[in-house]
Image (cartoon, rainbow, N blue to C red; front, side, top):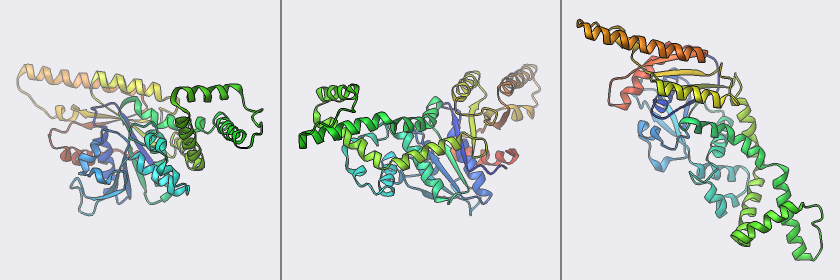
Length: 346
């Protein structure tokens, strides 16, 4: 097993992504590894699987043997909470205004626009603790997982010279108002027009609050910028393992191929492992029907699944199958999938 620090589970909705992520964490924990399982999926199915309470959102919770694997198995788990992460940034950067500014509070809500950026920072915080042998990430479904990677580009753009120019404009304009000196000759007319337009539309007080919020965030710029280097590590071959979860269904497989294409900017798809979930092949092979029609049905099912598996093998270097679990109990799903990781040696 390669010693990658992080394992990331991505995939479209309804393919068992979170269940497989939970089973992977359970499997590694049973191998005596210290595992942290984080979900940045807003649906928070992990909360249901582990019986977590919303009151613990944003905090690491230690759960003992949640899937009845071994009595001494313990998994650390976290439901991503942007506001809690912003509080940690505030403390780490010694910037208490991050918690009180109303614009920052709005941006730190679950759908406030900073969720992916703050998720990347939260992962970095947990890595810096150096407490865990492995961190498992359950990402949002579909192409939304790319937002997690693109957040690093957003951070880089955010701290570029254009924003610095805006702050320079605001501060020098205030200096003019306070001292009567003309000190704005180096500010572009475009920036001045932008600020003037925003003030006409939203009012001067909102623009001032907004600029104050950005200024406060700039005080914590080192923490935000550290997330950029983490993203570069995560998209490299030796630091993170990427699992793309799909199921034996033509539509889901096509969606997986689409995700492969859209993620190629960030990831080396030769390193990505495709997990074909809900496979019937092994179970069907042991089925011995006597009726001719049932024999024909069995052969048809085996042939169809083989065609779909071959289709994925042509598009990905690493493809691994998990059998369908026939149970309505999600805990049984995780438990049986945990056992299936035994034959995966990546």
